[in-house]
Image (cartoon, rainbow over all chains, first blue to last red; front, top):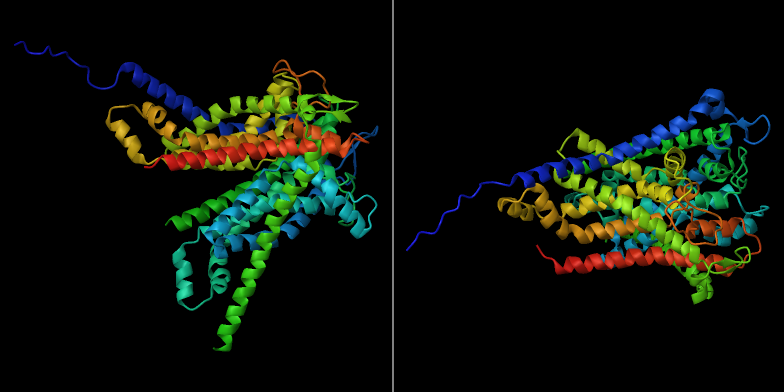
Amino acid sequence: MTAPAIRRQRVGRSVTSRAADSIVRRLISLNGWAAIVILAAIFLFLAVNARRALEEVGFWVMSLGTEWYPTIPTPRFGFLPLLSGSVLVTATALVLCVPVSLAAAIFISEFAGGRVKEVTKSIIEFMAAIPSVVYGLIGIAVVVPWVRATFDTDSGLTALSGAIVLAFMIAPTIVSISEDALHAVPNSLRQGSLALGNTRWETTYKVVVPSASSGILAAVMLGMGRAIGETMAVLMLTGNAAVIPDSLFDSVRTITGTIAAEMGNVVQGGLHQSVLFTLGLVLFSITFLINLVADLVLEKQRRRWQR
Amino acid sequence: MSRRIRQARLTQTLAVAITGAAAAFIVTAALFLLGYILVRGLPAMSWEFISQPPRGQMKAGGILPSIIGTLALTSGTAAFALPVGVAAGIYLSEYAPRGRMTRIIRLAISNMAGVPSIVYGLFGLALFVILFSFGTSILAGALTLACLTLPVIITATEEALRQIPSDLRQASLALGATRWRTIYRVVLPAAAPGIVTGSILGLARAAGETAPILFTAAVYYKRQLPTSIFDDVMVLPYHIYILATQVTGRPDDIIWGTALILVGGVTAGSVIAATWRSLQRKKVRW
């Protein structure tokens, strides 16, 4: 009988597999930074392209200018008409959308049964997946004629028409994020309140909603960010008159609409193009701040319930 | 029964009715949107509509170039966004230390998701079209849309990976596999359904975007189909925009038919992905 030959086996992982492991780790970590790199690059490229306008026209001249005539021989690049257009449309959309969306979120989170809840949520999710250009198209077909007939305006292409369609577009965002916030409130709080003899509604508005208030605020802010940044539907519906509006029934032009409508017709490297990049920079800064604050609020709330 | 209790019950009923009505209103609106697109779009559907290019200043014929263009652009987007997005998701779930930097990365990802699509368009114009001289092309458009889709893919990947129990990882590591081998052979296959579904949802949304491709990829009218990634293309969302705002005297059929194809494609992609995921979930048990 011969003893089986004992081969000396190397202990541990092979050199190649260890090398592969560390190379892959580095590659993957590099990609982890993608989000930060892209955000920084967006800011950088907007700023670089905006430089000419900032030097030749000046930030405050643009920001406080009340006239937008970009193509006349001595062009005026005042942002106020566009800013006021964006603010008017966004604010109106929020006024229309927030009460209904919050009520719906409360219903879904607090009162609806399992089946109703699931169906409602997936239908609202479908609403979020419709492309904005299709919202614009439906707005032209349905909302614009209605506004024209009901409020007796000339064209029906008004700030109100844009705001109505925007309200539907941002509803899914506000509903689902505030529903998440309500859902995250621990059940022990609800049970405590019910045990004290409160009805479910009393529990909801005295305990659950106040506990979720910061998350609900964040939901509204994220909806607002969406609304300010929305381009196609607003471009198709608000009539695009770049003047400071007097009422909801005026045509307005938003920041986003201006960029989308004019960028195709500018001279590359020209002043007008640079001004449009400045507008983009302003828009990016506004939404960046809104989103940052909303995300910080949401993060804080998440940590609170984790404890 | 005391008055207070009766009153409280009445308020309770009222509150449920009012909030329920709000939810019903939103659901009705969504169903109305779907029904409206279907009713107005269905009359346009025919083999000719999806297999022919437009004719007679886009007032007749089909939308084949736009369909092909959208498919090309979306595949390009997937090619760029998937590797980076999945890798970033793996990093966050498997490698990232708990700390300040990881927190900042997470904030950056959710912030990216809120950047307006037109801003991505400007970014793509400045970087890909002008600086890299790709011109208005599938390549520039796909890169731009990839940036826009990235946060969705990263989040989907990270969530899918987090649902894999750590027992699996520990078992593989205990058998002597390296970290990467564990991820590649054990964790990723288990998380694949979630990653694929989340990615398809993100890509479907990118396919419907108009603002980012206005100045990076889309062209008003082009008879030939694209032959290289440096060609500009007709795409469905931009085609709808053009038909709705710039073409006078066009028949409504064509525009609603285009909208139906776009919404139908986007929805079908999402529904198939979601169904597949739930089927896969039932198959695997931990």
